[in-house]
Image (cartoon, rainbow, N blue to C red; front, top):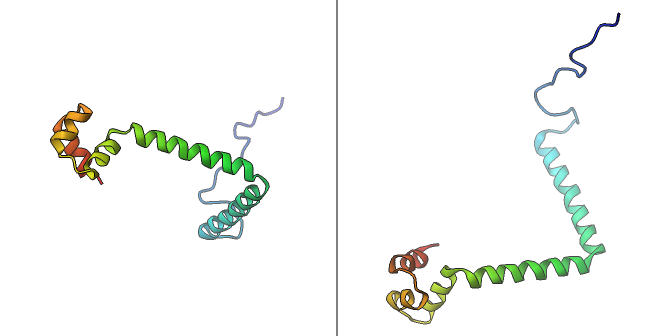
Amino acid sequence: MTKIQKNIFPPKETGSFDTGLSTNELTTAAKLVRNAYQRQYRRNNPDKIKRYNTNYWERQAKRELNDPGFKVKQFARQGYTQREIAENLNISLGSVNKYLNKK
């Protein structure tokens, strides 16, 4: 009869793999590899990058235009009072104050 081995894998050691690099050096090495890959990808796929950036900024613009905080700040720049902004946007005066004091 063969004996069934319960632990097939060796016990886990605490720490990282023995690569000869410290954690900081490994992180730097990983960053260098990632950056090189991204540069190569951008060189090989300029159309995809342009499409991605266009879509990203279109989404950001939609988000900004639909955000009540953006509209409140826009009205404030035009010289409206907080009360007038609240009436125009159908929100409370407290909400207008909150949006204007937000950083």
